[in-house]
Image 1 (cartoon, one colour):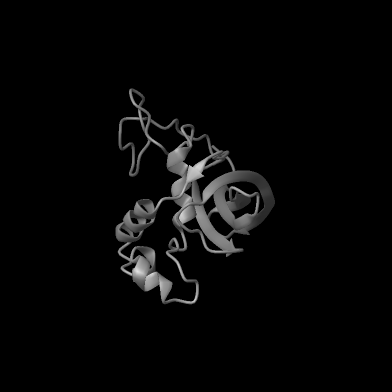
Image 2 (image 1 turned 90 degrees about the vertical axis):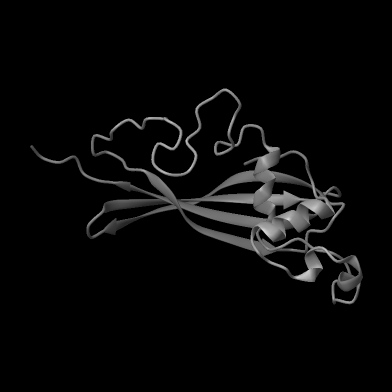
Length: 163
């Protein structure tokens, strides 16, 4: 996801922390946060992923008046075309975050997406597994690199069954 403007607000941080059931006071209590090593409210570790909601074209974001894949098999009526053996569905296999500094209220982040590595492995039962990495760099309002996120996706490429 590429987001040109992702404003970070204290209430966003608090609601995100609540949504992942993390009640660490550093995410919402300014007085408590001042007593910590960082000295201010910070965002939880995976908070940067919520920048997807600021990208109107993010493929997993529902769009008004359009069918949505959602979660679960054919959750909203989108029918997947059957595969002829040449490829399978993909899944999100890994996510890594490298923090160059903490995200804090008042930051305005910009996400820049870059291709990462690609590699293959042969699965014993699944056939060929194709891994692809996506690197997302989050920069703040001054142009400072704040977070480097690496996501890895995997899909199978099964041989076409002989008939």
